[in-house]
Image (cartoon, rainbow, N blue to C red; front, top):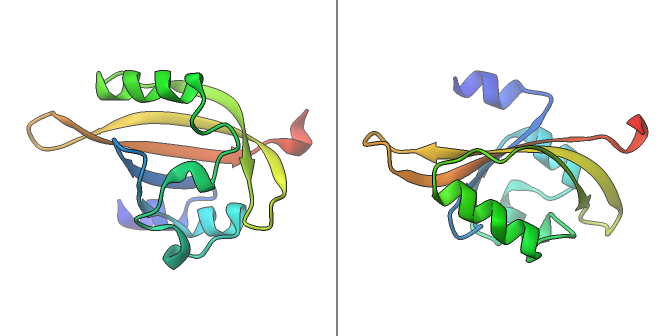
Length: 114
């Protein structure tokens, strides 16, 4: 499983329920321009122009309730400040007992697709 995540073309981010980045794969570094050291244990607001919005708060509420958010389009921002369109899927991460402990975010740039 780790090899699949590590080698995926899509950006895969693990977040806590407080929005702190806990893990990510190399595709995230390529897409956003941040190194692993730049972003681990930091707020995910560095990655998303729309962080903190009412929509984002609603997504976190769904995840905490164990419901996936599904596919959505949002705006990401690279380390150099360049905005881009991204397609995102957000799903709950559960522990061995089934309790929701975080969120899995899978993202890909879709700027050129529209």
